[in-house]
Length: 264
Image 1 (tube, helix red, strand yellow):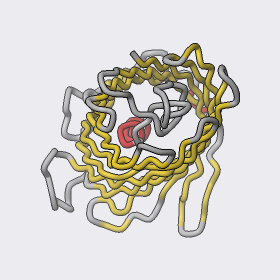
Image 2 (image 1 turned 30 degrees about the vertical axis):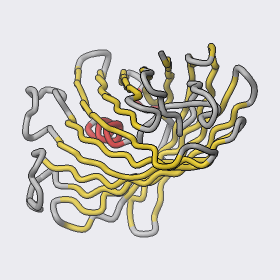
Image 3 (image 1 turned 90 degrees about the vertical axis):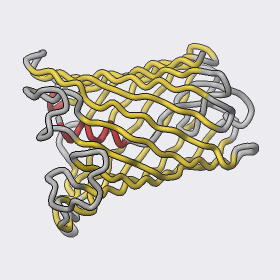
Image 4 (image 1 turned 180 degrees about the horizontal axis):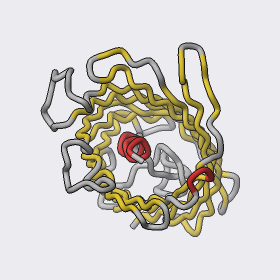
């Protein structure tokens, strides 16, 4: 579950909009940004076929400070084996600044800070043996039309056992992590849209030593637009892990979940 929580914390900024160049519509578009004075809430619940008794409930709450600057807070809780174990996972804060956005082309600078876990399974709050503090910075961008969007992002993450434990290569949680991804969104009609993403996470080193494995997470989702400011969606995901030099393995089973988003 530590891996699941960390992946959740480091994921790139996710929100939505069918035609971000023209109007504020929430429907799963990965380049959506809330307009000035708007709030956005996305609630997720997910599990996996190989651990169907384990569930994670997540919430992301964002605010458009201006039409080009937005901030968000994210957290989640997890249970396993029908609530025999419980974890409060990450609490993360991030921001996105839109450098280019007046036309179809979009380019954002993104960054954030998070703590994972707040309370891990069978651990106290902020237990040093179970807590990671992470900083991330990167860019995302793409091309948005009325009917479809293409997106890419790149993030660099530094994680350690303290917020400012810079350069301590011997620490057990020291990680330099590269995260890149691609995505597409298709607005099929006024009610339905689809989204597909491919997200790659590579731990560049761990405890100061080279660490060459990585993993792709492939996700496909279907969203129902309740109106211009609300949507519900379902999605499935598949992991492909780099287990050794030149060796990739498609993991058994798949993840699944649902989302509810509202802009207000």
